[in-house]
Image 1: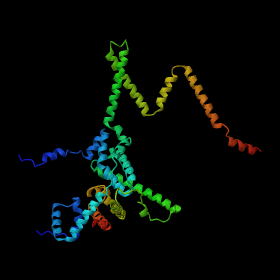
Image 2: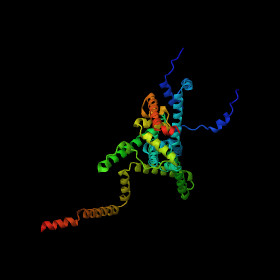
Image 3: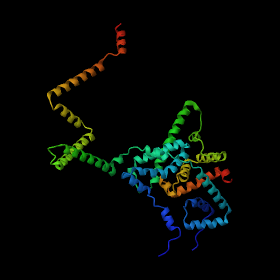
Image 4: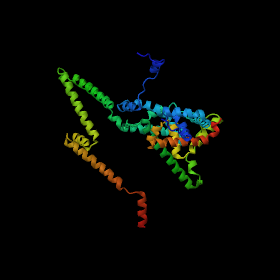
Length: 195
Length: 206
């Protein structure tokens, strides 16, 4: 079967595609054949090679410190907190701290000395549950946490409530005075209107 | 058993299999954030050169390349491994560069309104005081001629030439990045290079 030969324009296009590896084996072979008999295309190919070389040589170098600067300035990304490794590291630290604290508490208690492993386990449980509670409170950034703190402070005696009431009243008074004090400019204009 | 070709073992030991971009991204998302450095190393030269040719300032190109890496890092969990990482990175870079050029243009328009004269934005847009990376006069001339030739191309040709020669993207990657048929990319690159060749004729025949 006789395949139709590409025309000169097509070969010129192929000259530009060849260095980028965009021709198949058949096209490359056909182009080579055409080049052997076409001086204009050979010249164009040479010029194209010079152009490519010229562009390659015009690349600017990147500073050595560039990569370190990028790495040093990396922002915090949301996905980092979802990374299993981040959670694993945090969990291991919490667990180790809890176990260490529990052992200290258990070891320091004479009464529980005989039952140290049970005491340690109980302490670990207590610490973990307290941490979870505190964490949940912080996560919600809630009034509930504040409420718990107030309850803790006020729940012990009546005098605590009285002291807090006095403190709030003093703060209110201070705020009231700051808001309603006379400003010098206003005072001057008042004087003028009076005269 | 057929004997291995000469140099095969040497080639095997020399050419250790490199993790793909997608492998690196997966490892980073699993917690090995330090591996982002490998991605930066792979793309810093191409990205800075691509941006340099659009912005004409090495300082601005490096600053913007940094911003692009930061943006990509922040959004790394949204990377879809079905697509090439390079295409995604250069799309972010392209948008950042266009934003930067737009801001410059707005600045120039406001300067123009303040009475600095009626300069042509097309030539002002890429004006730069950045020194050429070329040392001697001849090379400096060549460097400047290349930049003038690139700046003289219509925007869509310029973009494609810069993506191919300085971003080192393949035709296929460019087609995906620009949402263009592959044939159009080939055609525009062909015409763009022809225009470049004409503009740089004096330097090509040396």
